[in-house]
Image 1 (cartoon, one colour):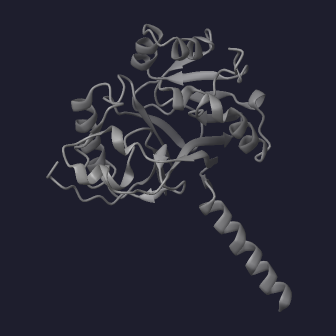
Image 2 (cartoon, rainbow, N blue to C red; image 1 turned 180 degrees about the vertical axis):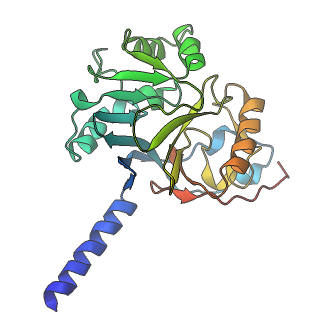
Length: 270
């Protein structure tokens, strides 16, 4: 009886750790899915574009900074890579899953902001993922490689010819789990979400659809200064909130690392 109690306690502790400490793991068909937080940070409330001063004067839960690791036969892929200053955290988190940077076969990028592609290059400007193919929306790639943002440009160009541009509605990998892009333009010109699904379950990685969860879930018409095309970003968010109702989702900037079932009631005041 004592041993059974100890086992139950151990499992409970494991589950709490998996869900509470910026880590989540599940399987969809033949694919392992890991959601990993690289750091906690205060949500960028001051960057929200709203005339409602009370919104900016409130306190909100800290955000996790989530990336996704996908493992299947012949594929070890990352969705986003975090900041450059979280590289060692990324290395450590991957090593806990017996994955080295050299093992990564694909890097799927939601968009070209430095908190998403910051882990591609080390401090010497060399790639951390020498065996990886970059998977990205062509609009996104063209925008950043033609921009004045040298960090983004060098990060994306570091893959050389090892680049695959996304095809709409087509699964990225040859697997039982369907992994495909969802165009979500506005935040950036080629901002992309990724869905992982089989006939029983679907999880969508939201990228930067949401930056301040407690505000934008209720008031999705509130844009943020980081949006390159603010009107399009709002339009995209409104569309996705309807399309993804009832679907499990997780964003990069959310106060948790476990997917939630999307249930959203829109306020029309903002």
